[in-house]
Amino acid sequence: MPQAEGARVQPETAARVEYELQLYYWMKLIRAFEDRVSRLHRQNKIMGGVYSGAGQEAICTGICAPLKDGDFVAPLHRDLGVFLVRGCDPARLMAQLMGKETGLSRGKDSFLHGGDMEHLIFGSTSMLGSSLPVAVGAALKFRMKREKNIAVAFFGEGASSRGDVHEAMNFAGVQKLPVLFVCENNRYAYSTPLEKQMAIDDVADRAEAYGFKGHVVSGNDLLAVLEVSERVIAHVRAGEGPALIECKTYRYRGHSEHDAALYRDQEELLEWQTRDPIPQYELFLEKKGHDLKHIREQIDERTHRVVQEAVDFAEQSPLPKPEEALEDLYAPNSGAVSKAK
Ligand SMILES: Cc1ncc(C[n+]2csc(CCOP(=O)(O)OP(=O)(O)O)c2C)c(N)n1
Image (tube, rainbow, N blue to C red; front, side, top):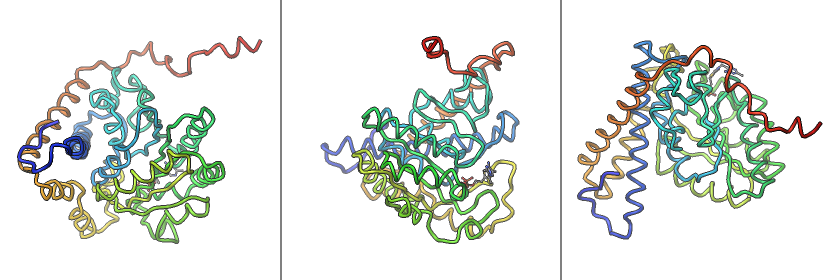
């Protein structure tokens, strides 16, 4: 990480400073990566749909930063940032987006369904909310094996109306499983506004009905997300049962790149852009005494380089070979069937 030149901080807080700058790097990397993907999509270089999370970077960053190795994460379709923060190689991620052989699923899928099991990231499915029961299953496995890991399931307020979401939360509540549910409430489920989605103000209120706590936080304020996530993740990891964090936020782009989002007001968009998570966090860094101009230059240079290298790698990678189309479709035979004979 670049050093915080000019930072008026004590030497003993160096690790914390490093962490704070890493958080800044992640948010900037997610923004730069996604903006480039939107441009690449217009150049017809991306395979499948692009669901930008621009404006929502503080959520992926603030929820994933306190996680540990071995924790299981089920992101939603807008959570490319989860992959970056959990350590997925940006070059392989870009190759996945371009449908190349070097991508996470070796060119067999778009980003939408591509997971990364090396980093325990479950590939989202098309059915909204259907990855929540999977995350709950992972949490049940952690409980049964007495492992100290947790599962995290992201979902939108639109998905929160689906039955799977309620079944998953109910089971998790009854079994007191180590699972954190994270609702990214960006006010629109495609074109459906919040008030046509639910009859209450906060998705978080539903947690109580399943026997655990719901927390509401500004999803555009990284420090606020972190404050809640660090505390709640510690609680879930300690075996005290599930929790729900609802992050209020807004997506800047349409539902996907083919959606001009004409159903929403430009004033509303502008209003939310004034609450952008990145300048908010920059203000914090500046107030702490960092030389923001210098840090921003260094981080911009770094994110630009990482994204450019990822694009170069993906563009130079081959498309998958037709004769490999039927490979990797099933898990390797563990021998369980022949043993049972
Ligand atoms: C069960 C189901 N219904 C509808 C769709 C079509 N669809 C895909 S994404 C989406 C909007 C999702 O909204 P939300 O869950 O709030 O997440 P967001 O896209 O806002 O991040 C819809 C309606 C779907 N994929 N699955």
